[in-house]
Length: 349
Image 1 (cartoon, helix red, strand yellow):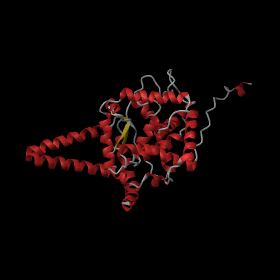
Image 2 (cartoon, rainbow, N blue to C red; image 1 turned 120 degrees about the vertical axis):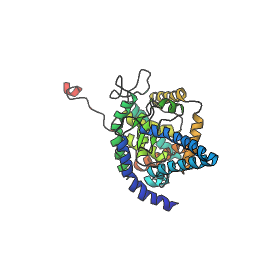
Image 3 (tube, rainbow, N blue to C red; image 1 turned 180 degrees about the vertical axis):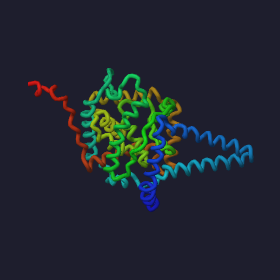
Image 4 (cartoon, one colour; image 1 turned 135 degrees about the vertical axis):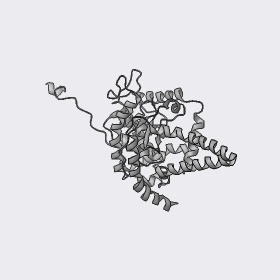
């Protein structure tokens, strides 16, 4: 199996896939709406049509043959366009990381994450309720979720390219993130975003949980780069967010990591705790009763493609991040922007 993984890494993930993804995302990027949404909707329609046609021709045997052939063809196309990335080496091998630290070393890193989270949060905009809000550059009256995501995507895209270069991975800098029209349904299912493998599109739901939009966007863009496993897409999303000069983007990365660390919030500042409470409230408000069934179905899909633990794989990003921070240290904080010349106290004296 290791030989297969190395062959996939060499010939597909670093050979065939990058130009293929650039082509697909460039074409889908020509339109402002999500083509992936329509391809997802088309699959059950195709299966239903195959079932009806097959049953008419040869009753139950024809139904099974037609549906099986259609499902197999769809899956083979999926594997050729993106799914083979599930067969790449393990994330630790791709990122050249040692096992995650444990015990006191891990506790010290978690404490540092909490301090960094509080420091970065102090520079972020917040609403009247004290919860983190969109910055003024994105909070324009009348702006739709599509325009907000498009503007943020222009900021996140080069950050992710730098993160991929730093990790020695191919860069897919084409395409653009889209917003699903079916966002209300996906919010009921507990989905914050999804990648369209047939069209090369990162897709997000709108609205999103407070503070997490930049990270969710970076996570879905990492799938476009061929990182199929959820923890590795999240890891690249963290690295991308941490490099941003904008505090709300850096904060989104640290906040996403804290959520996956799953440690008590004692020791966090009141502003971060307000944000965590707001995220819990957002999830409770939108989550539907069918969400657990959708989660189980998606977990089964991940296991079927070799992802150990199914949806629990999301949480493994915490170990990857702690191993990275332990080996390379915390990323430096950018210097704060100075006010224009002539407005500082020293200039006025």
